[in-house]
Image 1: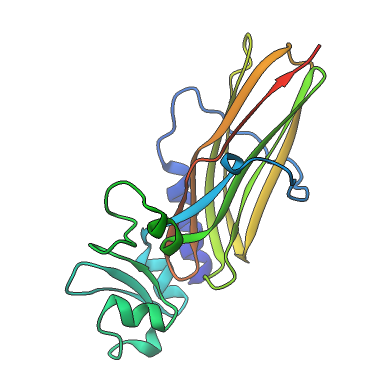
Image 2: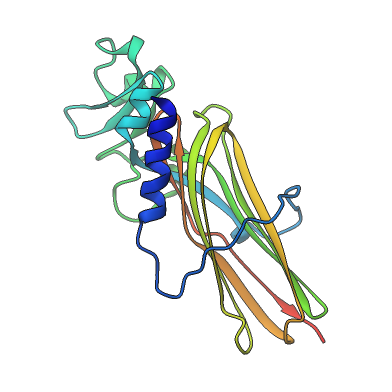
Length: 222
């Protein structure tokens, strides 16, 4: 049952419409997370909603409270949790409808980023002589459910025909991180920039977390 649900979710992510110029490449071998980059390279993953089928397959139920807030609650707590505040107390993931922590209201505030932070997403563009290296991925906070699926779209642009799109989609075995990297050689000199255009991670309790869009840039030298 669980494998069937994960396969269906992965198929759904794969079927999601991509721009006509997007390409699907094989994920390179992962490496350790780099350090020493500025804060735009690493930004939060924010909770935006729930996948009910994934939640149910792992012993959770997605409920909606009177104020419109939603939470994914362990089935053992059903009936004893009546509002979003109580859901937070039992460690449930909550999407607030009208409170300052909401991931569904207007512009993000600092309190929203703290309340809705599933983890961290990053995109590092390291530039060298005639080449650049990209590393990207995410980690899930230790007090959140582990990840079971992801869809990651990246973009790098630079001089000439340097425009490059890559898409990664897959299922995970209840993991707290995913990462990949690749190296592009023989690049023309100049300024390069890239970002995570779209990043979605689904957790085992059904939480759907999206990347805030980390970006990075640098100059390739002759």
